[in-house]
Image (cartoon, rainbow, N blue to C red; front, side, top):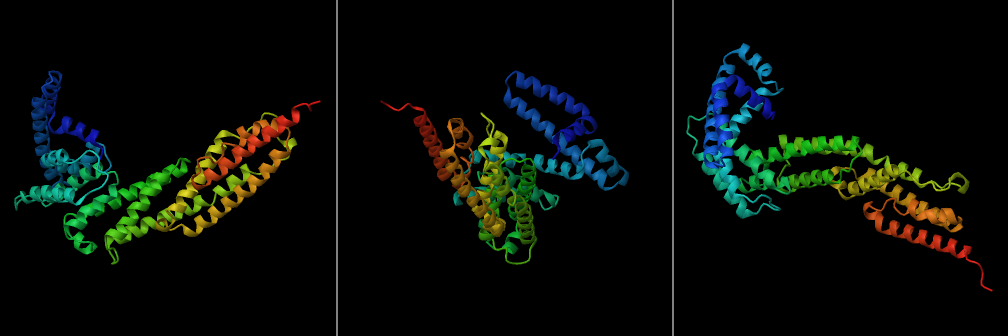
Length: 383
């Protein structure tokens, strides 16, 4: 939602006089540290804005020309959706405040007791709606409440547990209740995470946390909810897994080649004195190796088993063979290379998941042995 242009539109076109006066009074109350008055004035401003938004939406519904002018006035691409969403949030602000007070700021797990408490709040609020209320009122209650709850969860996918508790594990039964919003919200969050994955991969930034979230959410959606039938949710989840699989397969193919180039054996005459590997190349290779390790961990749910096994095997081969060549070279090479060996080869791949402990320790010990050997050769023989 593009909140700033909507508030600009409200203050400029809907309630210009009230918005200016109330904003002035709110600022004065805050300067006087009178938070009770500031809250009362803010509520009055919201009430007036909500009333005028309703009138504006009624006018838009009955006039094509007004509907066409609205995007220009507000300046957002999805103006109707954004305005309706804001109206829904303002209409549910009492519920959201009550819910926020009852919830911890961070919830590592959504327990049954918390779910039952949340359900009682949402159900009671929805039951207060009159029969003449707009059809979206009840939806706003559940949608806004569930989004607030998800924002407090350490693992946002756990929101689906509310829907299972409210209905059952059957997708068809969940979809018949307002708690179906929980599943829709989680799937939407996963889709946003997939978009973020695209962006981060293109920028060559670490994506392990994104892969974990997609994996965990997809697995829980499949195991905690019965998506066996042909439903919108099952089709969406299948599409997500297919998209992630296609993206990752392409990316998984490149790390072995990058690592192989870094570990390529070089003749001593090709190595200038004092030279070292490019730090950016090493860091990127580390990240790629870590990426393959993460894909291996989450391969089943992300549908990249075959590609990951092949890439992981290649990396293992290059690291093992490259290490052997490196150790032989360190033992044969004279003092300058021996002394710089630890700087040049000790760091690569030290943060690369399951590879790190074995290879980092081995390379560090090899460098130390080589340096010790070169030092011993320089000592004069005792008489």
